[in-house]
Length: 220
Image (cartoon, rainbow, N blue to C red; front, side, top):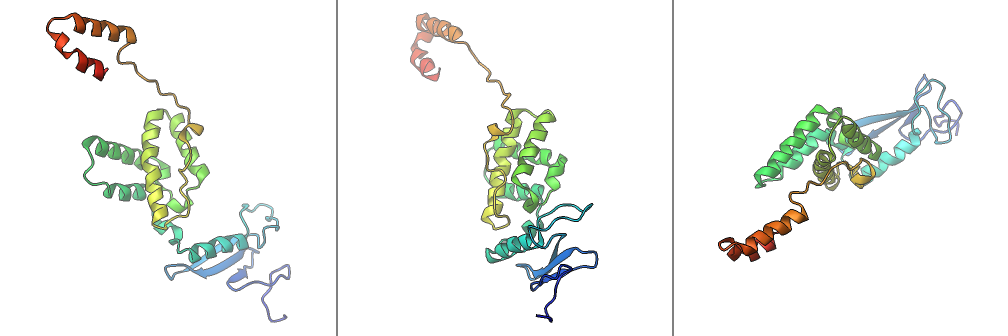
């Protein structure tokens, strides 16, 4: 027992664990790509208290548990170093043969994400709360509900692609949009019911257009 490494509280340290001179704990491991990595925390166990003046974080052993689970499940470390913008662009590359309007919508979404700090965020760092806050921010910045709906309609399947590729474990955009942003869109009425009835009455009574009545009625 005397030969085992211990921390400042006389607790035995596991393989890969160490404590630095400033008191912070470190865990060294080899990721799925074969590279040596380190994670740090001011707490060894969940029940430890964060030293005064230091940023609170989960404990080292909680981090170890998540890391080892990702390694066992062959999750690509650090989201493959891919940003949100890079992920969306990769998603678009797989959408070949789409209609002109769909392609224009893709470009619209990319241009918006380029301007957002969120677009530079690494995909494995995006949490559910981050995704919600970003959409709320866009609405506060003046984006309409329909625009936000279009953006989310692209970014959600892009993140699902990342899940399927084992780049991340969960899709942070799997939530109901209406529970996060206010639907302020207004349905435009092309023609009132009164105008529709008046038009159909005209068609039915007109000598020339009466032959098209059934078709126009079905279209309405």
